[in-house]
Structure formats: C-alpha cells, structure tokens
Amino acid sequence: MQFDLKKSDRKATLDAILERLEGYYDDTAKFPVSPDIDVKEIKAFINEQSLQSGGNYAAAIESVFKGLEEYAVHTPHPKYFGLFNPRPNFAGIISELIAAYYNPQLAAWSHAPFAVEVETKIIKEFANLFGYSNDKSDGVFCSGGNEANQTAVLCALNHKYPDFARDGLLGTKKRPIIFCSKEAHHSVHKAAKTAGLGYNSVIPIPVDEDLKLDAAELSIALDNCRKNNTDPLMIIGTAGTTGTGAIDDLEGISKIAKNHNIWFHVDAAYGGAAILSHTLKNQLKGIEYSNSITFDAHKWMSVPMGTSIFITSDTDILGRTFSISTQYMPKDAEKLEIKDPFSHSIQWSRRFIGLKVYLSLLFYGWDGYDDIISHQAHMGELLRKKLSQNGWTIMNNTALPVICFTDEKHGKDENFTKTILEKIYQSQKSWISIYPVKNINTFRACITNYNTAENDLDELVSELNNERKKYLK
Image 1: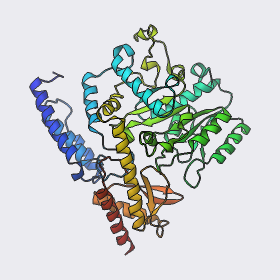
Image 2: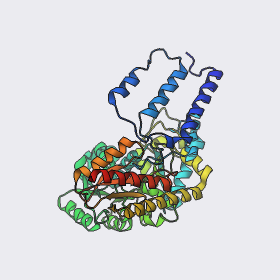
Image 3: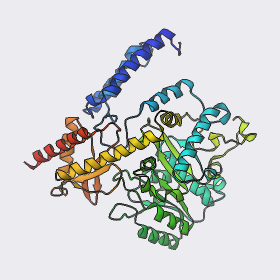
Image 4: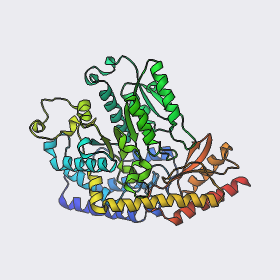
C-alpha cells in the first residue's frame, strides 16, 4: 500500500480536483442553494461506496464531489442569506491545502516556531484593534466559538478561585453564576455544562426594546445572586447576537462588572469583525474594557470553518488555566521566553489554524477587509430599504447586516412564515431562516457572502413578494 501514490497519479488527481473545484468556485451561483432532502437516498448513496480495498482514485473523488454538490446547502452561494456561513476567500482555501501538506504540529513551540509565532502576531494585532495594550494581551486560536467561550468560562473560574486548577468545583463554597442576555448563544450553556457548572448556573437576563441585555435587570440579578448565597462568576456581553445581530451595551456592562469585581467576557464571534470597518467599529465601544473576547474569523472574515480566536487582557490566565507538566513533551520552552501552545489551550495537538487569517491578510490586508465588511453592511441597509418599500416590517435594530422582518398584517399567523419559507426552499433559489422576535416568527436574512450584490437582493424580495401574494389568495 503506497499512501503517497505515484507522482503521476498525484498530479493527475490534483489536476482533476482543481479543475472541478475551480468550476464550482466560478459557478457557485448556478447551483441550487438547497437540495431536496431524502435521508434514505443520502444514506444509500454513502453505503454504495466500498471501503474495503480502495485503489479507484477517480471514482472515490467523484463520489465525494457528487455528495457535496447534491446533498448540501450551498452556503458559498450569493443568495444564501442564512447563518454566519460565508463564502471562503481564496487565500483561506489555499491555506488549508498548505497546512495539510506541511502538517505542522503546534503543540510545542520548538516543533513549529514559525507557525506559533505567526499565530501570536495575529492575536496581538487583533488585541490591539479591540483596544487591549500590547503588554497586556494574550490569546489562542480555537476550533470555534464554542471552544473560545468554554475557554472564557474556565479562565473566569481560575481567575476567581486561585486553587481551582487543583481543587475544581469542590473547592468553591458557593455556586458560581454566569450572567448573559436571553439572546446569547447557547454555547454559553454548553460551556457551563462541560465545565461542570451545569445549566442552572447560567442566568439569562431579559432584553430591552432593541433586544440588548437590559442593564437594570442585570443589576437586579446580581443583587439576587448574593442574596441567594450564590457567587457571581462572570458577565457575558454579546456583540452580534445570532438571531437579530444585536450588540449589547458593552460599555455599560463593563462598568457593572467592574463595580462587582467579576470577569467580563464579550462573545463577539460574529460582530467582532465590525472592528475592521471604519463605518462600524464604533458599534463595539466598550469592548476594550473586557477581560476576554471570542472572535470567529470563519464568520465575517470569510475564511474556512474552524477558525476562532480567544483573546484576553490577562497575560497569566491561560497559563494558570491550562499549564501542565509532562515528561514526554519537548522542554525548550523552559529555557526560552516563549509559551508552548499545549500548555495554553484546551487543545493539545494543534493544526495551523491561524494560517487562514495570516495569508488572507497578506493577500488582502486590513484595508481590503474594511472594504468588504463595509460593503456587506451597505448591502444589509439596501435590503432593509427594499423590504420596507415593499410592505415588509423590519423587526430588529442593528447596524450589522442581519435583517428580521415580517408582514405586520400577518405576523401573528403562525402558518404565514412557515408556509412561505417552505416555498422559498422548494424553489432552491434562496435560503433564509425563521427567528422569533418579540413573540412573532420573523424571516431572518443575513448578508454572509462578500459577492452578494444588489440584484441578489432584488431577486430575494421578488420571491418573497410573490409567495406572499400566493398565500393571501
């Protein structure tokens, strides 16, 4: 068995793959946005492929392409207006290929010093953009926002309880409590669960009219926490909620956290990229006062999935939270002023996640990202305007390109949004979702693709108008 294959076979395979990939990249808009879902058909197709002997490279590759093209929502499509799953940029794509070929192991600094230092530089750059000082910032690349938020919870625990690394929750006298908006991402609950705190340690705070965390309600909850003999652990503010794109009052929350001397984390997984846009960065005012930040580059920076960053203004906390001594890991870090990533992160074996961001910045620069993100925000404003002009009511208030809307006359009709959404999916021309806003199921459209243009917005509005007209007959 030759895992390397012959050079001629490698070249032929790569040529065929690249031709097919380039065809998809150029013609993504020609694919139906969403497939017809048939579970039995999908499972049957997968089970048809033999895993016993191998050897037929062309057939193997063809089966993968067929599966990805026929049985998936095409999130890189310019008319995918769904969750934060953008079309990946070209630099990010080739970064995955380069990282896979060289396969650096980032657990130990000495095994991949270039890769580790590249990630360190990128983290410092983002820390500066978010307002942290160079000498008071640290961070680590993560597999996603869920891992970054879990890292934040673990850091808050180790910050509040000096012996937590040794004694865990058994060393706490009171139950630690996490406060977040009712609109916060459910990875907060998952982080509480996996950290051993449990769901009941998360107190969701009601939101105000703009769907932002209500500071007055937060203050009441903090007072109640102490009366109930529980221990305030951290407050999580959200910069760009998944449902409505709301950005909490980060400056106001930071003052409350400071007054109560508890950890302030900002989940800026989506909205954090607003810091790259000259038109949007003021929306994140107050993020510089946080203790830590979650930021997903695989959302608005349009790099492939699994590219998240955890940043903190506490230079010691990651080491206190994750450091561990081993006999088998390289000891170079003990002699040098560097940190081994395995002692700085939930992960141990580490791939070169940061290359996707680094190469993208080398290709397009901060200026290029300013242009792209500002453009997408402009497309969001255009969509709001077009929807309003066609009798749709906008139900959320955000500067980010997330638009929740309904027909005010029929918003309380539960079948209205459901029926129209089913018709939109059946047409396979666009993809939007449903999100409840103030007890009304609204349509949710988000500009996730840097190639989405005004004609794509016009087509979406036209589809919605036509389906509304049919529904009312």
